[in-house]
Length: 76
Image (cartoon, rainbow, N blue to C red):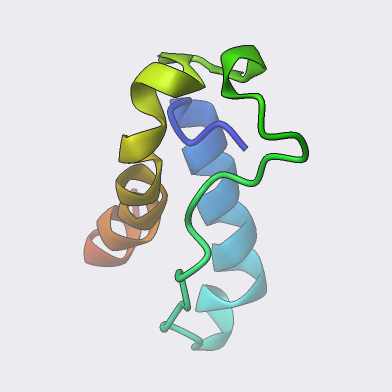
């Protein structure tokens, strides 16, 4: 999942909102917020931001930010 892509972040929130948040579930367990690689050859993974080798460390923050930003302002 490319959390660097704004459309991906929007999609993830919309799915979680529809299936959880709209039913009153407002706590999300985000401890698995690192990218999942089937093969650990980081030279071959690319995000909209660039190669995984240069940007993967920010991945957990962006993933968590999807939920933080939308819960802070749920109408956006």
